[in-house]
Length: 389
Length: 137
Image (tube, rainbow over all chains, first blue to last red; front, side, top):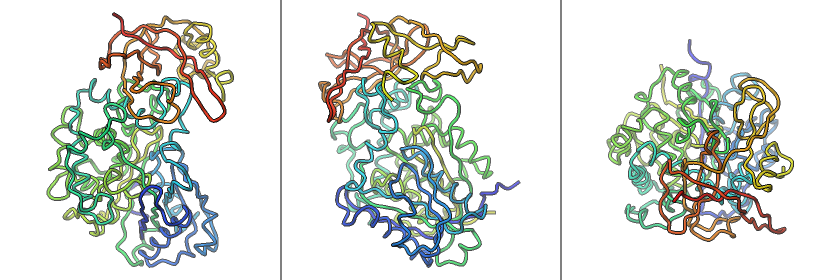
């Protein structure tokens, strides 16, 4: 039986506003309003007809406050996925689709806005969810350190070669170099700049880490049949899963031993593939949330693209780029090289890629996996497509 | 929630008294960490706080070189570890004596002593009791 989420809703419009951290020309809510208006313009949709919003990661903009500037007549749905990190990003699309499919809303915007002057540093906000005296006493106060400890385990215990993260970073910058919207646009990236960048928390140097930007992103979701009447070709949601399995999640480092050096996606990926009838081999392009490059590697393993043993064969620069790679990843540059507004650029690139609008087009791409924030207690992933059986 | 009011309050009090105490299910003897009041495995309510020796093995680690806020009392670089405590399997976050910056090896045996990590905030200082681990010579 076809899953109720399969192809029944679609993204009709996307809007992105991105600036250097601390350099947004407007306050956070205004930047968000501009992104929502851009998504509506993209879709040819009257913003007054928006009746729902979904976010994640503790966004500070309660949707009701957006109504006056957007001219919204009636708000019928506002919700967020739990968790302070990017783990809920893909789950937000499932929540939005659930609202639409159950008749509780008809036009839902999935969004994330982050302007440092308004909301402070993202890393501090994420960490506020987890900080306990156990962490403070160990000097472990940042996402970088938490993820570094897991990365060490991946490399030293599971034997995944450390240098494959460099291929992921290089592929990200290769795509960013060719994307006019990317922070790294027009810059030739030399891997030596990663190897020489300052050490943050071993094994992570600065360029192993995504660096925050100011900005906002918005995606307009409507029912699939309605999307077909709007300006742009629909990008359908085929499936979405969120959650965690026993033995995972905010357990003071007492996660099950076989899950410890994962990104937490095993049950989510299993359910996502089962619900959509797809396998990793059916995924044409991946938008991979990488807060840190090692966590991106864990996520690719969790989603079945490779194993600890085959990671070095699969996670290769040539295989990860849009030009001829079998597993094109982060075709906008991703969080590392396009920009990092808590990941919201990734689903926007998924939509652009499936419309043929990406700066790094993948020839003939039909499906795109959005792998949400890795390592969060609650994680989520989704699959989008531009056509389906 | 403070150290004196959470489900793990006896752990913190134990460190203050020089002992390492962990909660164990009164129904099935399972170690319960993070601390809670009900065992999700057998359904029993209630724990017995049980002492364990401060010996452990390295489960994983990182050495921090960046000055993150709230780490001001620690000299850079400092090494943080996840230590798997012997004879219970509970993992604790802690700090490692690492004066010579020798990369820890997973599985390496450790012995611990109780020290403090001082957290400086806008309103004062908070000395948190913690286990400082050392490699066995």
